[in-house]
Amino acid sequence: MMNEELKYPVGIQTFSKLIEGGFAYVDKTQYIKPIVDNEGYYFLSRPRRFGKSLLLSTLHSFFDGKRELFKGLAIDSMDVDWTPAPVLHFDFNSSDYRKEDGLEAMLSQQLDEMEEVYGCETKYSDTVQRFRQLIRAAYEKTGRKVVILIDEYDKPLLSLDEKEPLYELYQSTLKGFFGNLKSMDRFIRLAFLTGVARFNRVSIFSDLNNLKDISLVDRFADICGWTEEEMLRTFRSGIENLARKRKEDFETTLRELRNYYDGYLFTSEGSRLYNPYSVLLALDNQKINSYWFATGTPTFLAKRIKKAGTFPLDLNGRKCTPEDLTAVGLNDRNPIPLMFQTGYLTIWKYSPEANLYELRFPNHEVESGFYRELLQVYAPLVYDVNSPFQFGDFKMDLYEGNIDDFMHRLEALFKDLPGEDHNESAYRAITYLLTVLSGTRAVAEHHGYLGRSDIEVQTSRFIYVFEFKYNHSVREAIDQLLSRDYGGRFAMDTRQIFIIGANYTDSRSDRALRYEIRKIR
Image 1 (spheres, rainbow, N blue to C red):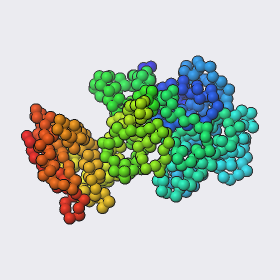
Image 2: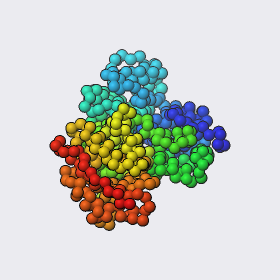
Image 3: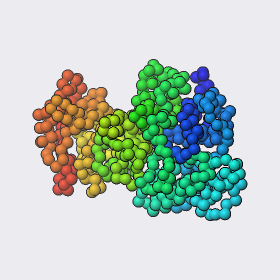
Image 4: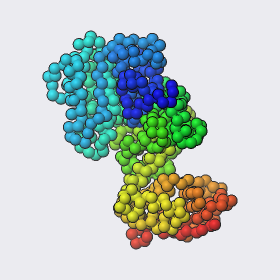
């Protein structure tokens, strides 16, 4: 395909529109054969904008019997039954769930449309009974068992805090609605549900004990997202165009795409995957940027990390069992499994002996984006244009060597924090996030031959080595920096080096932050 002919399906989640419009398509149809071959109930958890909606639309076209759309694709040459089946397709993506009737209104509207298709004159007002009647009507009109597709079932819950009254109402509504899948089983050929998280701890699926969760099944590991081989096969010309725009060679551009958008791993035997949404926008806009994170902010996750007192650096390397990763609820105290299912952490490696996964941020886009959201939760004033603590000022201080201004500004920011945030966890997190988000080379707890420094920050002209104490003294921090030779690894470096010893305190009778700065060279 010539470069100018490549059409990027940005925002297109309908399989028929994508194929008929001649847009570039990464063929995933080989993964749907084992699904369409078997009757049953399936669930797939993947992060938002990762291809779940397109997958369900592909299944819809298949069960509509539209074989012409699949010409030349993997499943076209496979032995599968192309006989059409009635399809009931629910999309939970587009609705305002903060209104009291948001969920019922969405379900009612979509039921209206499908009732018209299958000539179902409803006798009921509540959506649970209407869904039950619709399943029977679709079966009786066509003489074939029904296929049910439910996209992003958990969107109503993810839109709310678990303490909000609507949360319990929606939980109850969803439980009753999905209960039809079991009670109407004799009329159903297949049901496929997608979402970000499986909330079995809040009893939504308690009645559906035959649900096959394929989220961590090896053969379905790559069903959404793109392997590098798939991306290169389909979008090589687009990457070449991007490389020319960036005035660099192909491999350099590919390495940057990998750094920003690759790294997702959903089973220990799967492939590292790229985020399709971000790659498409990067190629279409011819600019590498943080696209996926800009579509939604995980504020509720950031608040939980803060509440748990988890140091941002400690998010990398967290250990989880397989059970942790597949059974989470919004009201769980441990936010790490939900961070995995929402795509902010991914599998880094797996220990068969211990049966434990190690989780890490998948790539630069996710790590920097989540850190920005954390800083917004810890210190919202740094993003307030009218604030004296703007992030850009902290950043400029580090790049210009104004470390005394940086520390003075940091002390003032601490003083402005609400009472409950005067603790070591908040102080450490804010300091680390301000440095690592400044675009500097910031390393926390670097292992040297005599110990670990708290934070080391490098810019093109300056090096800063920080040691922080809590309710101790600045003298202790400085003595530790000198006695353990923190920063000694920069002895041959020509840049200007500063060591900063500081002490946090939550005592109202003392300054929130005391510090001493020494210029080493």
